[in-house]
Image (cartoon, rainbow, N blue to C red; front, side):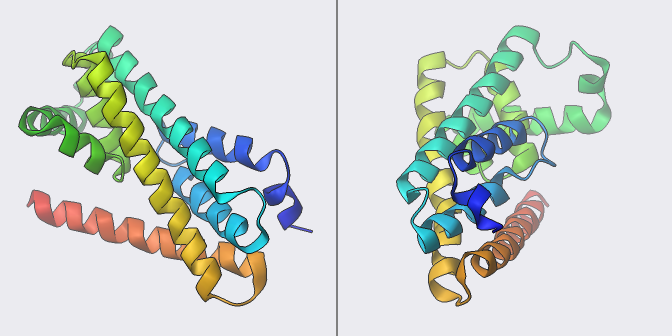
Length: 190
């Protein structure tokens, strides 16, 4: 059965690896994994929804912290790709945003893949106090995980057809919400 892997003991580990990988490579479907597992948790009861949220939040916080450490140790200009015009623009944007309000930016960037990477690299390069940064990132990551899992949970509750249908619909909803957030951030930048 297709849901056996998603309800089995490895489901949380696979989701956590996808979320962690998504911190560095935005093409990895971390958000989708959390949303799908939220739908599975809601419709089948396994794994428990709280464990989906905690594992996803922990993996997201670890990924963000790793990006922070890279920014802190390497900086934002060491490698040639970091000096490319588009990357410089993203990093400059992140620096301006961090100067305006660290907590707001870290919470908001958690929902925007490319912004999340740039913000965390710049936060490290800017030497934001590590304890303050970690506290903010953990809260932001748990909020993000709860939101993503809730999307799956709500879809599973509203859409009949069992876990497989709930996963498919929740993935479509998550992609639609992600596209809407991307569109809104692009419009806000203009």
